[in-house]
Amino acid sequence: MSCQFVPPYLLERVADAGDDPYLTDRRGHTRALDAQLRERRATAPSALPQPTDADGTKTIYSAGGGTSLPGEKARGDADPPTGDVAVDEAYDSTGVVHELFHTVFGRSGIDGAGSPVTVTVHYGQEYDNAFWDGEQLVFGDGDGDVFERFTKPPDVNFHEFTHGVTQFTANLRYSGESGALNESMSDCFAAMALQRMLDQTAEEAEWLIGEGLFAPRINAVALRSMREPGTAYDDPVLGKDPQVGTMDDFVVTTADNGGVHINSGIPNRAFVLAALRIGGYSWERTGQIWYAALTGGAVGPATDFAGFAAATVAAATTLYGAEEAEAVRDAWTEVGVTPVRGAPGGGVAPSVSGRVVVSRSGGFAGISREAAVDLDEGPLGAEVAALLARTDFVGLQAPDEVPGGDRFTYTFSYEGAEITIAESALTPELEQVASLVLGRAQEGLSDTP
Image (cartoon, rainbow, N blue to C red; front, top):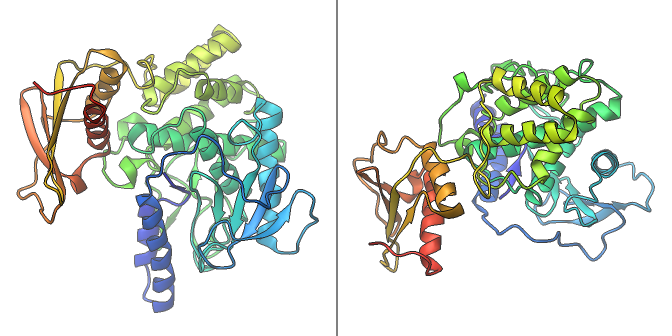
C-alpha cells in the first residue's frame, strides 16, 4: 500500500482553504492522485524491481511534471551534481539515510539485499506530497503557496525510505495501531538520520519532522513534533495539529486508515522519552533497541502499541540490560501503553475468545461466502482475536440502509451479536477480520457450522 507523507485530512483542509480557483484546482490534483494511490492494494514484492538503467546504490529520476514512474534518469552514483535542486537534494538525502542503515544497523539497502534505491522527483503538477509506493520513493514539487518542494527537508526522504524498510521487515499493516506504528517507525528513523547528519544528541535535537516544508506565510514549525505531538502547526489554512501523544487522547476513526498519522504521535513520543532517558545519540542504544524490535521477529503485521512496546523492552534487556529496559518501559508507561508480549505472528495476546462467523454477499455475480474462526486456536485465531479486541463489536451500529449497486455486504456474528455492514463502511479492523476469515475459507481450511 502507498504511504503518503502528508495525511489526507490535512490535504482536504488545504484544498478547501481560500477561494483562488487556480490553487483549488492544483490542490484537487494532489488529492485525486493520492486517492488513486490509496486504492492500490498490490502485493508487496519479495524484492525491489530495478529499472534497466539503475546505477549504484541509488538512482534519481525525473517525472518531468507527469505521473509515469520512474521517469527519465537524472543522476546515478557515478554522476556529478546536475544543478537541478530537487534531483541533487534527493540524491544527497537518499545517501544519508542509506548510509545510516548500512553503517549503524548493518542493513544493505531498503530490502536488506543490497538492491539499488529508485527515487523520482518532479512528480505531478505542483504535487503536494511524497510517498513510498511499495517499490520506490516519489516526491512532488509542492505548490509554492502552502508547501515548498518535498525534497527540501531531508527527513521527508528519510521517512519514506523507512516505509520501505518496514515493508521488508515487520511489514506492519497500514491501518489502526499497526499503521500508526508503521508511520512512527518512519518518523523515528528519520529523526535518527537527521540528528546523525547534524551531529545532535537526543537532548540537543528539536525532534521535528518536515521542518522547512511549509511556505513562510504558514504558521508552522514542521509537519509533526515528536517531542510534543499536536504543536507543530496552528494556522488558518492548516487548522490545528491534531496529533496526540498519549493513549488518554487516542483517536478512534475510520479516516486516515484508522488515524495512522494522528495516533502515531503516541509511539513517537515514547521513542523520544526513551532516547532522553537513555541519553547520548538517539541512533546508538535507543535506535538499536527499536531496530532490533522491528526486525527481530517478535513484531508482525498486526502488532499493536502494546505488542511493540513489549518487543522494545525485550530488545533493551537482551542488548543492554535492566537499566535500559526500565528506561524503555517507563517511556511507554508515560504515554499510557503497557507492554504486552505479542501473540504468534504479531499482535497482542488475545483478550477475547469464542468464535467469529463472517459472511459476504452481493457483488455482480451474487456469490455468497461464509466462514468461521475459533479465536483460541492457532496464529490465525490469535490475529483475529487481537483485531476484535480493538473493536467495540457489540456497540457497533449498522446503517439504516445498506447500499446496493452490486456492492458487497458483510455480516459478522460474534458474542451473541450480529451486524451487517456495507463494504465501504467497514472499519480497518473489521476489514482485516473479513479478509483473514474469508481468505482461510477460500483456501479450504475452514467451514462454517
